[in-house]
Length: 126
Image (cartoon, rainbow, N blue to C red):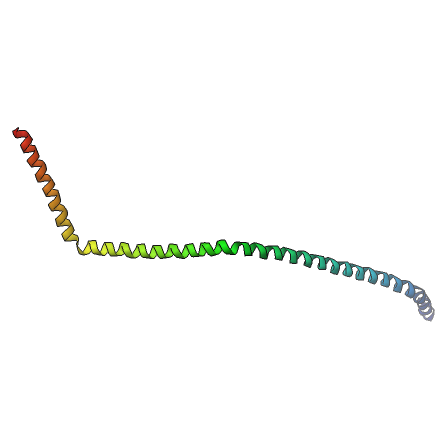
């Protein structure tokens, strides 16, 4: 058993520097990839900033037309409200004076009928 432990110690002493070098190589590769990743992140952030600047300028260009549409929408709302109140007023006036309007229309129709019958009678007499 002691011989086995001594043999393993000898092998470990010989393998330990080699394994340390392998671990250092992997560590260097990982650190290099992290460095490259951070460099790519910097470039990506620069591209995102450029894109955001373009979006901001596009939004600034749309502010004037949107303002115009907003004012137009408010104007249309005002016209709608005014039209609605006018129609309601007209309906109220017609409903309040319906009997008078009906009597006036009937008397006008009767006058026209009377004139037509008188004209027919005059043309038949001739």
